[in-house]
Image (cartoon, rainbow over all chains, first blue to last red; front, top):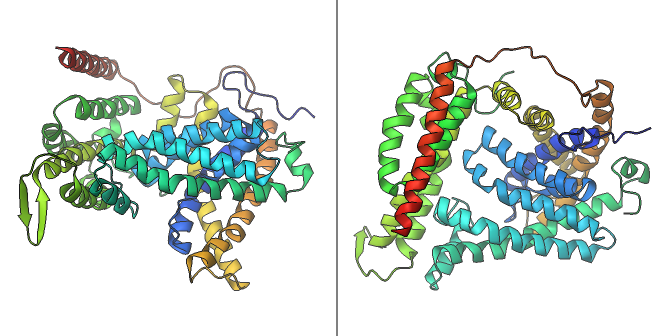
Length: 197
Length: 260
């Protein structure tokens, strides 16, 4: 059965078409749940993006990231739109992480999480600094204030805030995705093109 | 389709326009806030353009409500963080109550805040006056890949259902003894039991959906027909070209002034 017949224009298989919207909804739903039920100082709003990147590759991951932020903007918070570029890169890195064999062992996934976190911090800093003046109205604004008080510029403080929060958040995200995929039956994974893991 | 995101069903001015015209307008407004001097644009564009449009479209109260709710925490945080901790050589301070604000910091907060009102307000008004289905259809008809439009619409419909499922999973796990309160470590341990049922369910559901997509020949080549017609009068097309030309001229002017 050739289930991965791709549409020529966009290169997305029917599996990707089916999984990406669900992954986007999981991003938004989990982001809210983690903050309202568990009240943790992490976001976990890119689990769906990393999942798609790891399962279906860089392109599908990037599309998931961008559209998740667009949808977020469409439904709840228009201010999520400027960060769509960051989400795209997160999905892209997740896709390449799998190609480099990150799924083989847990520590490679953790490493991919740290790298993703640093890159995400580097890209979101200029957006946070120039569009939002360094603050987003969240608890992490305290970090920005502290770094500025030690003499950092608005851009520098924004980056340092991200450099503290993002690697932690993304490492946890990658490890969760690794733990879940490792426990899945092979038959289900084969559907997403994961044979060797 | 009730409560699809921000959209409010009203018969106002913006609701009659083609989504592409509104989208181009929003892009032009956001471009202006970054190309023109900062406090000016926010002070003029919000009361001068966005608010009249919101009133003409009969969504003014909801528009202001959402704008205030999403931006007020950001604006307060902006004034406090930058007013108190802005890195500046300018020693001028302003005392407000017991707090000593730096003048340059408050100026920075005012500039960024006024910009932010437009950056968040313009898309907000677009989404409040445009049904997501109409917006996506207009985008597909003007060249966006059909698969991207499909993903956007399905995700919009799925978010309430998945959110509900997430809350259900949390309650079920709590009933089985999972602790979602207490210290941080205890709450971190709760993440995996909450997340894994959601992800596994998503993968199983995706498999079924993929079969449905194939059974309906979504990826089949050839022209498609549309159920609805979105009017796009000549006048609006001309307005769109005018707005894009204005944006282009602004960018050229800004780049030219940077190097002079």
